[in-house]
Length: 396
Image (cartoon, rainbow, N blue to C red):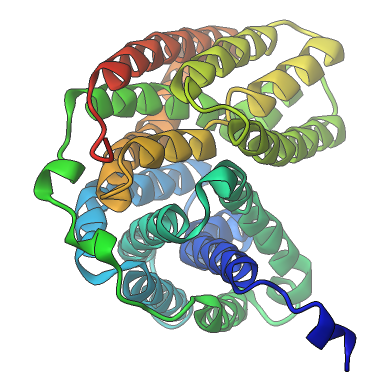
């Protein structure tokens, strides 16, 4: 008798691993278009004649459409189930990538196709949230959501790797073709659809309650401030005399800290039964301190600010999703679609608004404004935590 026969893996464990792998693969595949455009911006800008400001506008449009598509996508997940919607998001993302490769001959067409791919982002994110909420044991969901959100920076790494391996050899259009094939390769990772009693959730379970709206507003402010880190920290540091190499390495460090912090926050969340939204508020306060440090000249404040800003100020999305689905288990996609709308709205408005402040008043003023926004987000999170604690959960 083989060792496998003597010690078979428990079916529940295999199912959990497959659900987690499917959520990660779906998340990466559905968000690839926007990160690939960012990674190939130099080559694409030369060909399609757009500037960094044009790139910023395109990314803002992407997140704006993601925000508009979030709530309808959540409703689709509740109606048809996460497996069906995840596959639809992957196919739409791959189709958008192929369309950019073949049809993007001007900047306006690129923006339109990127906006189309934003719907795939909303579909994939909410399908993944529902899959984790419904099929991963409750005592492991925090870690699962943390790992899923930590997978998003992997898309940035893939986009960066596409520059030397494909874009600089075969051209940026072929990089989009390769990315489309990679996205389609995620389809087998999506677990098969199964009958799910949670799909019959009442309309009330996914209603936009006051508590969810307040948390969504907090997410808008926090995401707007945190997005400034990835968007402006390198240019800000270079403008204050630091070498571009050091500035870039600091951003890489911040991204690594962010990945570790998202996983760590999820792991710790599984060891707490309540108070997760209040913990997010505390993380945002520390993140705001990091943003203030970015306004101080010198390499030490820069490194400390990036570590605190990325490590705690941008490590909360997985914890937020976990907290929301924990309180709304009957309609996890509908509930997280409301708070996810806030995250996407912050991704849309943050770079535009804070970039304007940086142009008008300089980076120190911009970092101070971002810190104030993050502190205000912490206050809204605390208010949301109190409202959630008073509201009976659908599971009760």
